[in-house]
Each structure stands twice: as structure tokens, then as C-alpha cells.
Image (cartoon, rainbow over all chains, first blue to last red; front, side):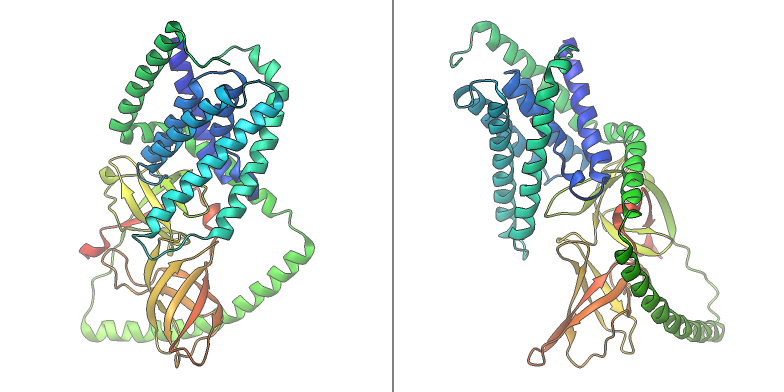
Length: 166
Length: 268
């Protein structure tokens, strides 16, 4: 139970930092997907299902805060979490750097496809089209930042594991 | 590869799942209170992030500053002309008020709110604030900074918090008027980036770059005269019945950590 409470508090902390501090930073620094990065680390490197619930919880956090797509974010991030976990178990089964980066790439690509799919459905009810170039640029930057961040976290992971928070 | 989970893993999985679902449901139901409590942590984080953003903005290159200075000088010139026109209108307005015996002043009620979160997305520009329906906020209320520059409208409200859809959001729009000779009416809508579009301007309308665009007062909750921005460029094709203008806001929406919401404007 203590682990669950710790994990929940940690999720809220990371989500708060991502939507308040990071989102206010200039340029591409605002695109750091902190929660996704942490979730991928736990799913792939630690083999923990907590990453799935972190992603679902992050989606709910966005919906509760009113800065998501209605109930869309909870569903999208839950799907991303489940698929990332399955991929980590079946495809990227080793816990090497390449496994973590592969799982991260898969997770953020799935998130991008689902978000764009959600937007595509939304455009059938509104006059706005999807801005493909802007969306493409956004996700390319986010992928690059996630890869760099996962690389750094992977190399620091031995130190992080000493704390044994989760 | 562990394809078949052990009973211990399954129990652990369902235990975690159950606890997570309970926590999430609680969060959902007490969302208003959660956001208010979180706002205590979010406010300083937003301030720090915005400070870093401002700091990096000050480190721009010299050539960029020279270009900005030239642009600002042009704007000052245009605003000086506008101010003269405004002074004439003020005199005229005072005179008309006296003639009509109009003594009631318009008292718009403003509620100050802190920005608690920002959405980062290619599709939307949305912020969250720490005031809600308990403070009198309602969907459609205009959100302003600097006592009169509109930056967005309330799109969603809970008892303790609200979501603001910024004018730069692609799903945002506002009834507007251009302060030109004809006082052209229209709709300003968000586009990609920080610029706004003013469409369906009749081809024969005379417009100039740096003309000021304000709210027209035709929307129920949005009063007349809130500054939206200035015309940045005009695109016109003589064969088309309409021309378009690109509007640039006079403020940077991302630099504000505190905003004001005008409430009850439709009741005046």
C-alpha cells in the first residue's frame, strides 16, 4: 500500500511539474514528456506495470485539469501504457539501452497516432483540419527529446535505483 | 520472456489496479478540490518556468533586437495617430453622455486568477486557472491581462478551477471590430502559432497594417473594447470578394502567470 501511495504521489508530482514548470519553459524544452519518459523507464527497464497506471493516471490528470481532449486523454494514455507494456514483454524483452529507446519510440509513436486519430475524428464534427506540418514538427521534436532524456535516465538509473522508491 | 504471469504477479497486478482505480475515481469526483490544492504547488512552478522563459527571451541576438526595435517604432507611430483619434472620440463621447444625461458608469467585475497549468499540444492552446464557478466564473467569460487585452475565454469550468481557451487556439474565435474608418466587423479566429486570422473582410474595406482590433461587444459575455491585437499583414486577391488580415496580439500569452476574468458582463 505504501508503494501505491508513493507511486500515486510521484505521478502527481511529475504530472504537475510537466504541466506547470516544463510547459512554461521556452522553445522545445516545453515538449519534454516527463511522465511518459518515467513510465517507459519503469515498464521497460524495471518490467513494472506501474508504468501503465502512471500513463492512465496522467491522462486522467489532464482531463481533470481540463487541459486534455475531454475524456480522450485517459483512454489514449491507457492504451499507450498497455501496448508499451506488451511490447516491452514480447519485443524489447531485454533491458538494454536499445530496449528502453525502442519502447520509448513505440510509446510516443502510439501516443502521436492516437492523438492524431482522435483529432481526425474531431475534424469530422468541426471545420478545422489537422495541421499536419505543425503536428509532425511537434512530434519529431518530442521524439528527439524523449530519446535524449531516456538515454540520460538510463545512464543514471543505477544511481536512481539506490533510492528504491518504487 | 515472461508471457504467463504467476499467481503472485496477477494478485499484485489486480491489487495495484484496484487501488489505482479507487484513487483515480476519488480524484475525478473531487476534481475541483484537487485542482485547488494542486494550485498551491503549481503557481510557483508556473512562475519559475515563465521566469526562465522570459530570461531566455532576453538573450536574443542583437539583430533580432534591432528588428524588433524598428517594428516597435512603427507601432508607436501608428499608436500615436490612433491616440489622437481616440482623444477626439473621447471628447465626442463625453459630449454625448452629457447630452443624454448618461451618468451610469460601466462597472465590469473582474476576478483575478493564477495560471496553474498549460497544455502543450500542436492543436490547442489551453491554460488552467485556479478560480471556478464558486468565484462567479462561467463558460464564455473573457480572460484579460493588463486591464483590457483579451487573451481568451473560459471554455470549461468546475467549482474550483476553470479552463481558458486562448485566442490563439485553432478552436477559438471572438467577435471583433477593426478600428478603421468603417469599423469593420468580423470574427477573429485562432490559427497555427500565435497569430490570429480576421476573415471575410469586404474587398472594398480600407485597412492598414497596425490598425487596432478590439472586441465588438456582439458576444453575450464579452464587452466592447477589449484589445485583441493589431493587424500584422493583409492578404488580398482582387478577384475574391473578401480579403484576410493576420492579427498579432499585443501581448505574449505565455508570459502571464496571473490573469483577470470579467464576469457578469452580459448582465450589464
